Image (cartoon, rainbow, N blue to C red; front, top):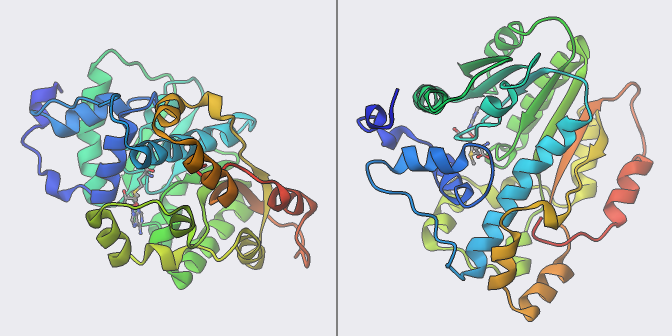
Length: 314
Ligand SMILES: C[S@@+](CC[C@H](N)C(=O)[O-])C[C@H]1O[C@@H](n2cnc3c(N)ncnc32)[C@H](O)[C@@H]1O
């Protein structure tokens, strides 16, 4: 399908958060982000503005670019080729990964998003892309256990990796527990890992004094985003431990690996940079696995992680 064919689609059905994320990611080298942003805004032209010197804008771009690559970092050293992505929005890790031989990637989100995404994938594939692995797109409300099990049953034999970014902050405590229970059962049975980039700590935005626009603020309030974050990394670790998971590894990326960092550095003052460094880490990406035995104390790996002082934005 060519670009013109998808211009009649109803963009109102797009999750506003997934849409705005894609428009930010169009300023990075994340696979297919620029092309998809162009399709999404068609027939208007999508022109990323690299001359923009709004520090907050670039801080967000850097943050989301880092979050995207942090998942790839934790996938990299695993031999597992069955991957299930939850709430993938307009992210195309699935298309990139399933281009490689042996991978079986199931890309999921709510039905409206998946319907539209199917058209995007057709359009992107038509622009000279070949698939050596297998790619499935499937609607999945991640809190629907029977639907979740049914989709997992599509994978060939072997361990699986479940990945997600930008989901847990939309779920309240009960819903998070529900999701953990479903994933725990599946990983216990199949073996494998859960990589989640959604270890966000409360009040991070306020600490950084990053003023966000009114529309985004309203959106955060409506979805209880701040309330749904964890109080601390320690609390997040205890939560997952209680749900039967342990932290296998945390993603660490060098800032120099991010394509957007140079624009952020051109836009930030020394004073702002100092404040950001002082704030410390506000988000983490963890690779979790099912605990063999119930752990009573935090693992050594997490003790080390919490003591490290990362740059706040990532
Ligand atoms: C902030 S967007 C993140 C999209 C993508 N992961 C990214 O980082 O660009 C949140 C996504 O979660 C999806 N979502 C919300 N609730 C969901 C649920 N219960 N099950 C599956 N997906 C859900 C939305 O449709 C949306 O695409």
